[in-house]
Length: 454
Ligand SMILES: Nc1nc2c(ncn2[C@@H]2O[C@H](COP(=O)(O)OP(=O)(O)OP(=O)(O)O)[C@@H](O)[C@H]2O)c(=O)[nH]1
Ligand SMILES: [Mg+2]
Image 1 (cartoon, helix red, strand yellow):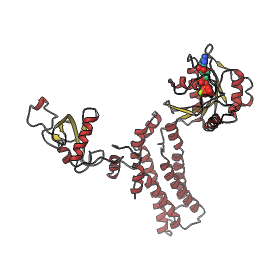
Image 2 (image 1 turned 180 degrees about the horizontal axis):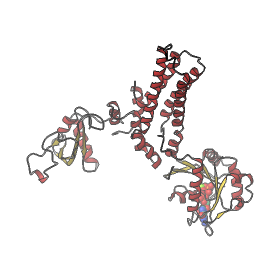
Image 3 (image 1 turned 90 degrees about the horizontal axis):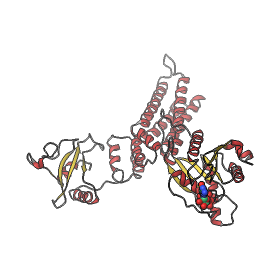
Image 4 (image 1 turned 120 degrees about the horizontal axis):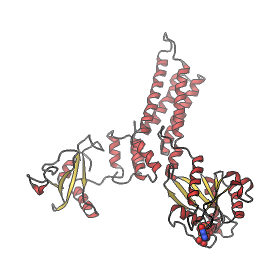
C-alpha cells in the first residue's frame, strides 16, 4: 500500500503486541505503530470487524525512501486467496482503494524514483519469456539506456550552447565558432542515434525468437520433428498426408536468442481450399524465416523440396532426411542431395534424423544453432538495446532533426537561429523518452499496458 495515508490506514488493520514476552517473539514484534522502517515486523492482522485474520509480517518504508517515493506498507501474509482478499477488503474499509494497473510504477516515475525508460523495463521484465529479453530488461531497469540518452542529451545541449555563442557574439575577437567543429559534433550525434536505433531488431529477436520454419511435402514428418525438437507433443501427427493445416508455433528459450519453431502445412498442389490456405501461410512464413528446415523422407523428394524452398526463402536451409530410424545421426556431404541443383547453394547441412528414436536430433540442433548464428546479430553488451517501437520513433525524430540541422549548417542554408530550432526539437524528442517534460500523455500511454499491482 502506497500513499500519504498508508501508515494511518494500515494501523487500522494491525494489532500490535503489547508488553514483553508477548507470544515469546521478543525482537521484531511490533509494539508501536508504525514500527521501525525497512524492517520486517511481526503483527496480528485483523479483518474489517476486528477479528484476528493472520499472523503476518509487515515492512514499512517512509517517504521518500521507498519504491514509489511515498510512504509504503508491505504485508507478507500466509498464502491462499482468503487472507489476501479479506485483508484487501479491510484496507479498503479503512480508507484505501485498489491500485490502478501500473499505478505503483507510475507514482515512482512521478516522484523521480524511475525514469520512463526504467518504468517500461519493469513491464518488459514481467513479460520476459526468454533469457535475452530478461537480460535486456534488467539492463534497462539498471539505467543503461537512460544514461546513454542523458549523454546524448547533454551533447545536444552543448551543441546548442556553441550555437548560441555564435549567434550572440558573431564578431568576437576570436572569430565565429569553427563551423566544422559544430558539424563534427552533429555528425557524431547522428551516428550514435543510428547505432541505438540499429539495436531494435535485437529486442524483437529476444522477444519473438529466431524463426525456424519446418517445411516439406505432406507426411514428410515435419510435425513429428517439431514435437521431438521441443520435447512435447505440440502438433498433431498422423499418417494422413495434409494433417497440419495452420502454422503451429512453439517458442523455446535458447542462447543467445530464443527459437520460434514454426510447423507448416505440407507443400503440394492441393484442390482442398482449406489446405491451400494453410499452404499460403507456409509460403508467408518461409519468406520471414531466419532458418528453414527442409524435410523429406527420401533423397529425391528432399532434393525437390530444397529446390522449391530456395525459390521461397533467402534464409539458410538445413536439409533433414526424416524417418531414418536405422541410420539417423549420420550427416551427408553437401552435394549429396540428388537433383538439388542451384537450390543446394543455400543448404548448410544435411542431417539424417529419426523423430521416433531421437537419433540425429543433437546433430540437427548443432547445425541449426550454427546457421542461426550466421543470420542473427551477436547480442551487444557494449550498447544498451532499444526495446520498444516508442523508443525507436522518438530516436528517429531526434536523428531526423539533427540531420536537418546538419544539412542546413553544412551549406549555410539557414540562419543559425533557425537551424538551432532543429536542435531544440531533437532535445524534446529525447525528453519524451526520459519523461523530462510535459509527460502527462506519455505516462497514460505507457502505464495503460501494465497489469494491476505493479
Ligand atoms: N518410423 C518413423 N515414422 C515417422 C517418423 N516421423 C514421422 N513418422 C510418421 O510419418 C507420418 C507423418 O508424420 P507427420 O509428422 O504427421 O508428418 P507431417 O510432415 O507433419 O505431415 P503433414 O502435416 O500432413 O504435412 C506419421 O505416421 C508419423 O508417425 C520417424 O522418425 N520414424
Ligand atoms: Mg504436420
